[in-house]
Image (cartoon, rainbow, N blue to C red):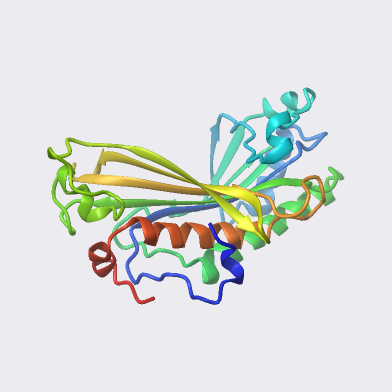
Length: 277
């Protein structure tokens, strides 16, 4: 995948994209000294905007490795396991459309569509500025509690799309109408799922990967067929371990997601989604 942020060509744009959820995330070295009480103390800083909480299991560390680092593997210090046992807390806004996920080594900000009236929040106008604002509040909290600086080691961008039957396709056998890389088969497709991975290149070096996962599903609200298309770009620009570095990967990862989604889907579907660029 090309170095998209330096590409002069504008990114594909849709008036009605099938996006139902986005997430921006930074993973960092586990914060020493962070205890369960800090989750509650942090909540006091954001409770007015995020009045509800949920407890979840912690996400495992995830790294995209290349070259010698891939051969050696990523070292994870054993002392980090105690902090990871703290689990993960969701802080949810009143409408349920935004949430912050926090654990001892990760900060995630999600937007999700909860009703037909919810309109996709645009990356430049809402998603990234909201993430940066809430991450700043968290880093200020860390400083106020003398928990030390946050050392980022990976960044992640995720887009979840629901491509629902009735708009350009009807049955699983219509998959070639949705996905541009599928050709004609000797027999109708009964169903199918697949995973694709692409390197993300910056200045002629791989800095991350884009993983595309497609699964057939039924929409809960009306049991209509749909494809769930999950695109996750994960990586790091600069050297891991440098405090505060790496968040510029978010723009690169988002560009990779948008370009590859457009490449993997058909012009007929683009017309339905109102492609303008």
